[in-house]
Image (tube, rainbow, N blue to C red; front, top):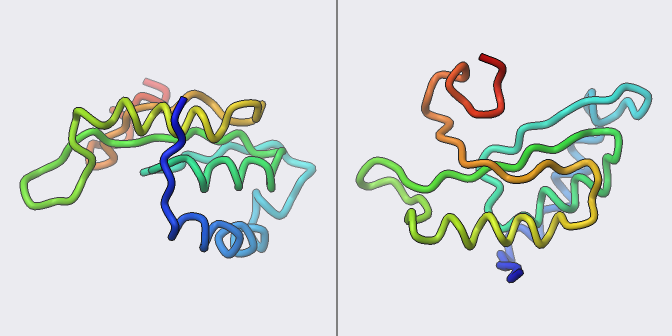
Length: 115
């Protein structure tokens, strides 16, 4: 699997982890938790955060398209993005398989939410 690389994600992943570590559920390692990552991109953040917070189950997601004028991944590239996320998070037991998610839909229609 091919990992895509985003220099900005690499630069800011530790800052994000340090910021999250100040808040529950990330700060409380005694309580299992889950985290939906909306717009996982390459998977660099998800992999870094999952390693930093092993008590949190991460659900990465990405969106394959959007309304005209909005910068989003073309539908043809969402498969390569999902493969990149999977490659970065391989071997991390607290990361679920990435899902396609249109976060503009009502939350009850998200594939990771109970019906």
